[in-house]
Length: 469
Ligand code: CS2
Image (cartoon, rainbow, N blue to C red; front, side, top):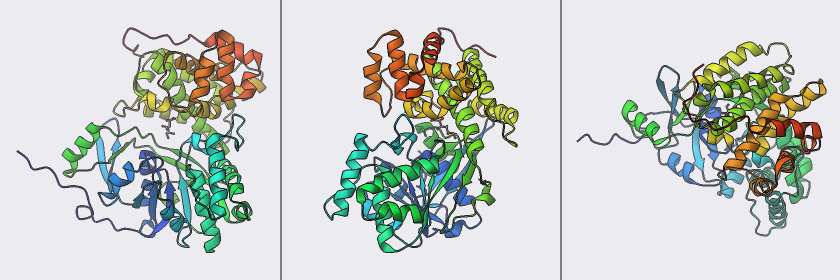
């Protein structure tokens, strides 16, 4: 019998441990395939270590800590896999360890706080504003005001925790810092600012003002398809690399990072690893959110309705592919800025989505629809209607979601209870109530409600195998 391979640690891969200068909230696969990769590949990587905090559970931090915070990035192309050990995360911490978060954010050496906390964690109302009345936000506002008064108060959300930590930074005199949202939201820096400043009102005593003066909120567009790691991936790393890694991460070879904003306390030279720094991020953000994420949402709902479970399978179904291409045609009308090269971007997406070696689960993409559709379908629909066209491609994305929630109860969404309530209604009323959870403007337009109602039923479950193109 073969002996088990040794566990991955720094004796196997002697990567230097850089000092913590970046604090990250949301230690998940995407952070590890994206920002940690860019930090490792920056020329000044030896000066920039990341302390990454988990969200709800400690598991990922425990697993990573047990192997010196090293892990394998499996870059999976259509032709094969390549393996690289990433060492830019130097500390992995349970998100509930608020004392450590405060200590690190309050330290002078910390210059950057990055976020991958999911779109749903920014406390946005359906109209895109910060929702102080949402239950989780209200709890955090109370916890922050208790903490400010010296009483026991521990915010539960990542941004609530960040605000507590920023209060410590204000008091420590460590000076300005950059907060960099890496979630798929348009104007994510501005959204993060609104949420953080909104929550800081719970603390009182000048924190919101200090944040306005000292915290730079950087907007970014982030891209790298990173499916959930499977047991097979773990076994493959053991076999190919000759060590045991409990936490490898699998990603496509493609990666992209566009950033816009100030870093008052410095940052790694990410641009030398391929990141792009721009003055106006909006065209890049829209290109990515509409063309990539929008078509992902179409494939997630239409694809599952037609019996598929991965992006590559759904794209190989001509009915799903047509819906994607129609939506892209619509979105392209509103992506006219110089240098966007939409035809090349679309072609690259077809190749990326078609990489069948990446098993990107549609069920994973289908989560948090109400927040995602607001960024992916609604702006294109609004722009199309403002240009005098129907916007059927974007409306079909909404219709596919509406059909999807009719046939499954197994969905994750911040508004899951409201979706279930709306689902109990019939016909046009049901469609309108569901649309209202995404956007009041959409739900209040009778033409859109009837357009979407008419498109419901487009994707019927298919009995046969996907139609080859
Ligand atoms: C996906 C994204 O789950 C989703 O909603 O659309 O995670 C997508 O894979 C990434 O944004 C790719 O960069």
